[in-house]
Image (cartoon, rainbow, N blue to C red; front, side):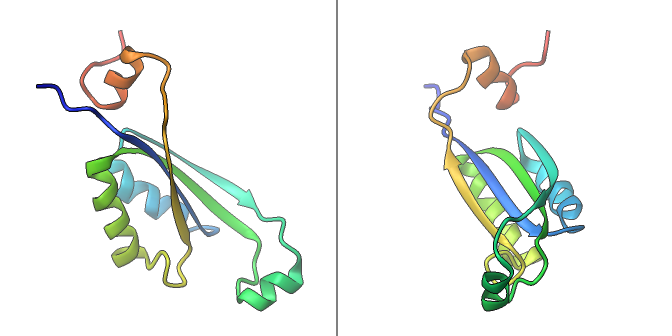
Length: 113
């Protein structure tokens, strides 16, 4: 019986310069990832209140299935202190994807022809 794959997009926002290490760690167990330089838009008074200070950030986006997601979240919390002052992470459930060929590619069942 074929397992229904549940895909998630994991987004991680950290201080500028820390995204590469997170990308390297998560790329070992993900279907695809991208690391981008980001610039926040919050007003300085809110940043000071939250203790954030710097608005230059790295954004790491990773595509994972439900099994890999649990491992990725644990690694983020333990190794990078995400959620404990080291940045934030959240997930979005991928409701649909282009077609079954794309899904098979992301899940490693097939290679690009």
